[in-house]
Structure formats: C-alpha cells, structure tokens
Length: 267
Image (cartoon, rainbow, N blue to C red; front, side, top):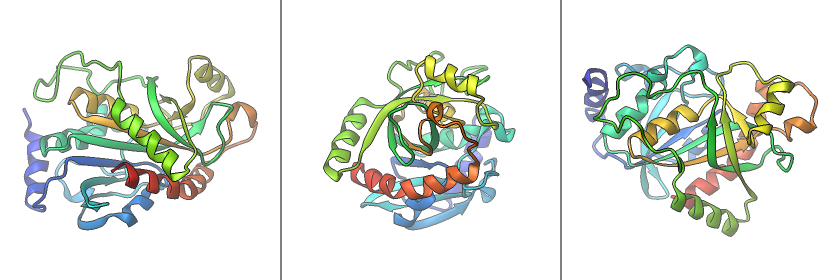
C-alpha cells in the first residue's frame, strides 16, 4: 500500500511541473548550497502530507525544486534523524516519495566528526563506504517490493563512476578531498573516548548521526548515491577537548563553500 506516499506525491504534483532526476540532501550547516539554486518552487515540509518536520538547529525545513548549474534538482534543506524520535520509516519517507516521482541520483551531505588522524577541521571527505551502528534498519519489517528486493546488495553503496568523477573534479578545482569510511551512530549524544577508539579500530574515518539510513533506502530502490562529509574537527583521537554543536555548525558553514563548488562541478 502506498497511501501515505501517494498523498505526498499528489500534493507535490499539484505544485510542480518539472520532475528532476537528481536529489540533494543538505546536512548540518550546509544549507548554503540553496543560495546557488535557481529556485522555482519552495515547499515547507509542514505543507506536505505525512512529511516529518526537522527539529535540529542548522537544518531548514523546505523541499526545494530548481536548477543548479542548469541541472534540474530537488533539494532537501534539512533532514530527519532517528535520534529526533522518528521511526526509520519516517526518516526515509521523503526518499521513497522522491523515488516515485522519478529521482534516480542522490547526493547526500553531512557534517561529521573526524576519526582519521590525517584529517583536519574543514576537510571534505568523499564517502567510499559506511558502517551502520544504528539499532534499527529502514528495511526492517515486511519488504515493500514496489521499492526493491528483500536483500539489497550493499557491497558498493556509493556509485563508483560518481566517486571517480568527484575525485577528478576536486583535483581540477584544487580542492583537497579526503576519502574514507563513514560510521553512523544513533546519537544524539557525542561519543565517549572509548567509543571513539572503537569506531577507529573497526575502520571508521568519520562519524555522524545521519546518512546511513538514507543510503540504505536509496540502494534498496536502485538510486545511485554520492556522499560527502564536511569534517568539523581535527581528528578526535588527537584532540582531548569538549566539542559542541555550535562548533560543528561554525566549521560546516565555513567549509560549505568548498562543498558548494564541488557539487556544482560534479553536476
């Protein structure tokens, strides 16, 4: 049954005339990309049937249709997190609606804590792989065949051709681009020192509280994914200091300019 999704789709189709193939999810403090979009329609989440509403500082609350570098895009200015109290089905509900209106590619961004000792605050990390430490999965429960198979392959969650394209564009633009594995945690607390050591031992280069559910859902539906993290601090193992959400926002806002240039070039 697609009752909820269909209600959202019917509403969106009453508001827009062009259906893009590329979607962008903007993470904490990374809403600056919106300023580069030639906005054709801005729809508050609160107006869309069954859409959750973002509650975290640094996240907007609009679905934006427009053009970026001449490419039709749909941008989520603000995302939904499991730690806000939403069920996983709610977190990925917008993605399922996007799939049904024709989205085929997804660029997902986030602000993440650095684990790799080679990382510095303000670096961009191209996400090559991920580890889920969430206590739930957006595909748990009866499989909805309309979206994808019961057991989707996740051996390459990020599209290889898009990864290579992003690396070459970063080189051309002179943007220092790190690569690595993103670990997704439930949150909303920041990590203990023992948890940081654990995340590094199991192969993490950056850690955050989003992205993983969306990437799982996108792969389930056959949507190609590109993921980029803004590293908001010097490597956590090297820096024994309290790190606040305000600092995350500050660094993300500054590094967001590089992210904007890179995303525009990739598009």
